[in-house]
Amino acid sequence: MPGDGGERNISANALDGFVVGLADAARFDAYDNFSWTWARGGNFLQDELVGRFENGCEHGGLLAGSETAAGHNIPAMLRTLATPAAVLFLLLTAWYSEIVVRAPEKPGPIEITYWEKWTSFEGDAMRAVVDAFNRKQKRIFVKLLTISGIENKTLMAVAGGNPPGVAGLYGPNVAQYADDGAIMPLDDFCAEYGIRRSQYIPCYWDIGVYRGRVYSLPTTPASTALHYNRRMFREAGLDPDRPPRTIEELDAYAERMTKRDSRGRIVKAGFMPSEPGWWNWGWGCVFGGKLWDGKSRITANCPENIRAFEWIRSYSVKYGANDLQTFRSGFGNFSSPQNAFLAEQVAMEIQGVWMHNFIAMYAPKLDWAAAPFPYPADRPDLANHTFVDEDVLVIPRGARHPREAFEFVAYVQSQEGMELLCMGQRKHTPLIKVSDRFWKTHPNPYVKLFARLANSST
Image 1 (cartoon, one colour):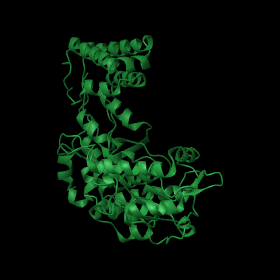
Image 2 (cartoon, one colour):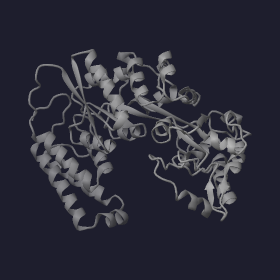
Image 3 (cartoon, one colour):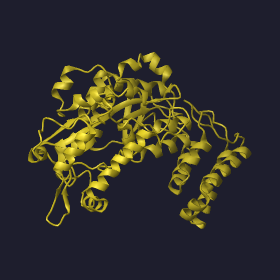
């Protein structure tokens, strides 16, 4: 059937082959115990699904293993998505997008569907940005939809030929999506709209660049810092206005603030490398290590990484691995008043700019502060180290109105749009240019610290 705006066209025979292939693969899964098959045969189900898809495409006139007219690398996406739930979702998406004839568009603004993962106040912040964009002009109307599991559902929608116009993904998704041909490069649009790297804190632009091309642009960024409990500092005889600057000072402070009860059980910890546990893979970076050389060689066993994990081990040796494990087993959920830092069970913790939101929500009376995470005393060049990340906007391959979609993306990148969004989510912006009003009215008293650390990370 005729398509428009980059829609995928597959003959009826090819579609039949695709449907039969999916059904056969799903039936195979049901008969042969998926979990055992996956462990036994690795990618067997993926190969079965992709093979049947390719066979159907060959008989239907679509070259198996090639990209479609819209540029989708369908077999690659199927290998990524071959799970029972994904099979069913992709089957329904493909059937809907190929069988249902689209009604002619009505006169009026072009509608761009925007899928986003955020809920609660984060979702409200982006809703305000969407509403502001829709009010500013009448040619385009952005329809915001909240989607759970967005990183998988967007990929499946692209494979099914019916993607949203804009999708809000996570920074780490960019490389996979680009390799799968699931998102459009944005270089030409960026040049046309005057969007350049020099306008951003460099690391936040670079997250969206893959193999020399721009595939995403940032929404809300994040960086990390040492968060510490000022009251627990005072109780241990430490100056709450003088946080530890080196790893050696961090260890000494932690020892002074770690408390045991009469039975020898840990009841307060000064610091634990395993809490919250999100950056265990990255401790080597704090000591100057890298996981690879940036080209082709894995460097996980470099001296700096080994030193980092010896430091982590030192906590188990000093305080007892079993004692630490028992203590940690009593921690509550992160998003709750029983969070170890919020409940004042742990005095110091590496956390991101978002932590202020949880403090305000669950422990508003907590006396806390933030500072750059310490560095090894013999490596002052590593001062102001931080982990950075961001959420991103992409235009999926096959989107019906990519130019209009990018016009919305460009508005989000403006100082007006970005400050509206980042103020609503209580984060710093990824842009270099920031208004005085943003800094003065921001509820996070350490927001400038997080922006400064991000800017010093490159």
